[in-house]
Amino acid sequence: MKRETHEGEAPVGGDLPPELFVEYGRRLVEWVGDYLRDAERYPVLARVKPGEVAAALPEEPPARAESLEQILADFDRVIVPGITHWNHPAFFAYFSVSASAPGILGELLTAALNVNAMLWRTSPAATELELRALDWLRQLMGLGPGWHGHINDTASISTMLALAAAREATGLDVRERGLAGRADFPVLRVYCSEQAHSSVDKGAIALGIGHANVIRIPADAEFRMRPTALAAAISDDVARGMRPMAVVATVGTTSTTSIDPVRAIASITRAADVWLHVDGAYGGAAAVVPGMRHVLDGVDLADSFVVNPHKWLFTPIDCSALYVRRPGIVTRAFSLVPEYLSTTDSSDVVNLMDYGVQLGRRFRALKLWMVIRAFGAEGLSSRIAAHCALARDFAGWVRGEKGWEVVAPVPFSTVCFRYAPSGVSDTDADALNASILERVNASGRAFLSHTKLGGRYVLRLAIGNIRTERRHVAAAWDELRTAAARMR
Ligand code: PLP
Image (cartoon, rainbow, N blue to C red; front, side, top):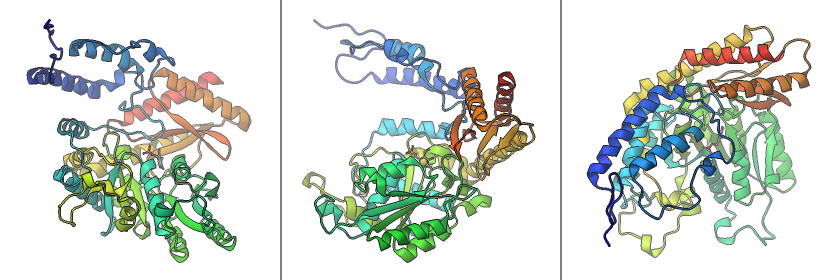
């Protein structure tokens, strides 16, 4: 028996009718517009308890089509309350990110086109735009020519691929012969600062390097890798018959946003013939500000470099740009063409499947291209510079307030600080700061995160959302001071 379909419901075969798509598409774009304008009406940090969202969802999938009306009602009722609003202008935790309007529109087009840019021919525009958009980004950051850039989902994957290229560059032929059961195989070593992101460890773990072979180099008083300690670690390892494989330097470390001395590190890696990867996942974006180009000093001497437009370049998650000097090493590590993917295209074309593990790839370049064009170099630069200025203002307020201190330099838009009134022990101050954080985050009016520096609990305020204004930072500071006053 033919079943009747209701308003807003899919027919028995085929997609939703185009008119319905347009009707609901309009409604959703309006929803998104309202959301972006009024994100402040939501608590930043979701208030649901663990399991609450799952409990509101049926355990079994629907047997029959449901209308978009019903689905969207549940989106409002069940999903939105379970969202932590990364697009809220008072989101100051971790590294604050933003989906800007051009980036969101780019995502819509990407979903609509739904191309898989694995081969050049499977969507020439996707491949060519990706290469061009990444070259634009390179120029925006003031890097020299001669880099190949492509997009991955995250910096973690970009760094893992860079380490895989470093392993390939050793000439130990891991690709063919693997790691296991080889008497001739040296212990490979990877070096990074004690402040480097855990993605370095994960990359080394995934590549069979072994976590114990990730050597954390001590940092100086400003949380930057000490080049002398790096040089000493490398020569000790060589003396013990180990093989230094890669150094990962960071521009904008996760806790304090410190900047490793990349130029000094590069002269060590060059002398030792070791791959240098630079993790600028967050900090690299600041180089689009002409006055901040110095943050990438020495990066042109590196073998690879990652920056995440999805962190501080207003591009929706996910979009991580990996640059390599010698793309031939990456393709040597990863290119593998089964018959069904072989083509008669010119050997000049780039097939992005050759640059990593994944075969299928989303058309992520579209949103980045739209963001870069819609803001232009000046617009990107002025927004990032404004975030840095706000962070300096905030640091000034903290320094000027009795009992509060800024505990790390502020080279970008992130401030590490702490409430440490006189007469309170370090341990009690740790607990005090943890309680302040909890209280502020529970208010729903701001969301911050924390780190530990020198064993002490430290609060972090990271500015990076495109809609954050001075009033949001000032309100967060009020929340912090009020919470501290209530605690004492
Ligand atoms: N590198 C640094 C310096 C980071 O701060 C982070 C995350 O915050 C990462 C890498 C990992 O980023 P992703 O989430 O893109 O893997």
